[in-house]
Image (cartoon, rainbow, N blue to C red):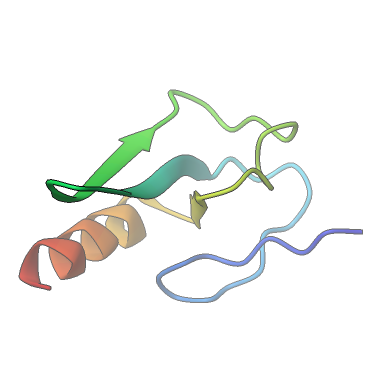
Length: 72
């Protein structure tokens, strides 16, 4: 069984809860480092463990995560 933890507040997802699923992907090329953060329009349990996936229990946690990424 896979445990899904919010990437902001670290609360554990319970079965049936609707969470926010996205991807934070970084790629390196000769011209520099590129980072892309995207979000799916709905939770997809088949994609929750893919490389670069990020998980949020609420829109507030998603916004906190994005704010921290912009500040870095």
